[in-house]
Length: 289
Image (cartoon, rainbow, N blue to C red; front, side):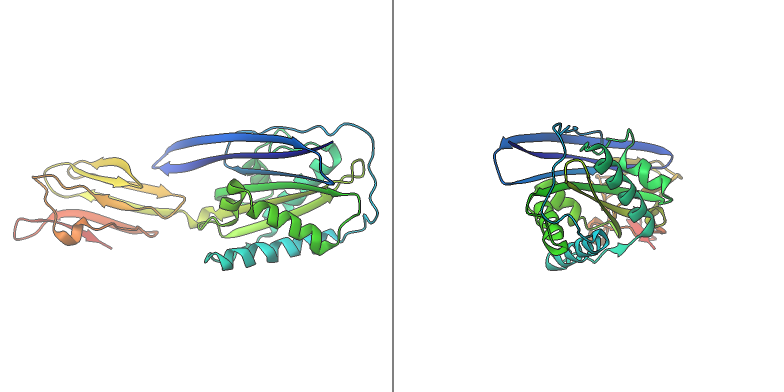
């Protein structure tokens, strides 16, 4: 009997001034069926742990275990960027630090035959940080594959990528619009013959978006950032940091009726500033730069 395991859970990290806010949501799905090939997938985004699968039983051999793992890693890299291009996403850059983290974890999974984002007692972002990657976003996809007839590099890479494409949580990671870097690692278990694949995606800390909102009128100014209600008081300036490009929308009341141009959505870039002030005509406006 073969176990097919799928785990999905997501989290979002936002940085506001010196405070950290974590929003978590998640779910799990497990199914058992009899098939000729063993496949499992796991996906994680700055989140809590998923489950482990202990395969038990003795060693499993396959017809042709000699697969060039570096070639498989490059095939997965190419396949991931091909899929992103098809879906109108930017291509990812290979990152050696993420690759070191992914390879090390794949080797750990292969040596233990555990299958969990926290199988080694660490979170994905702990592993990438140890490898030297400074991030504001880290995402991770996992998979294992086994076929008694063996794989070619192309078939193994293809099975991993297609499996991730067809799983909603993993697909979101593959197509995340804000990550920029990727590292991939493969390893084979000598005990079970399983191939473990790890994809680590990242957005570097240097890509954090910092912007300011200032109030230069005599009443508080209300606005939302990605739908979250915010307020800046008279003479205050608030500095925000976000891992992803935010949407800023000022919400004018009767006393601060901004011009039609100031009712639009602003999309802050790094270093942007927004100052609410009065014009000579005694109207409220937003100076953005």
